[in-house]
Length: 126
Image 1 (cartoon, rainbow, N blue to C red):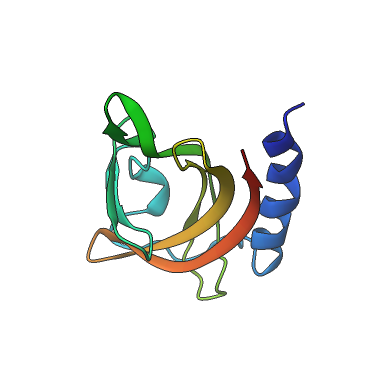
Image 2: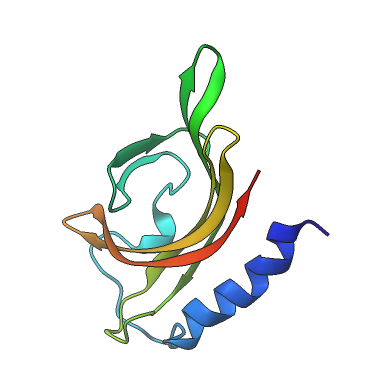
């Protein structure tokens, strides 16, 4: 089991502990579960990134300068408003300088993903 795999379960448990999906919860105009979260543009709080097939890559001379990977998407009513949010686990590779794992909580506003929270995960210097 990789170091990231060991962190995924506790990180998801932490996120969902703040409010799990409730049976009969209200569903917005565009249900969060029907959106293609692996192919979208996101504001992660430090810039906008376009993901294709769960991957964003900024390459310099053919090498990864900043590469982001959506490793998992799950859903739950994190903020208790009766609407599900999407929780994206994103692995970051900073060109060999470091790797990290974080959780990003997105809701939908006018059908577009809006960052509600970021939970910093572990970082490993390489």
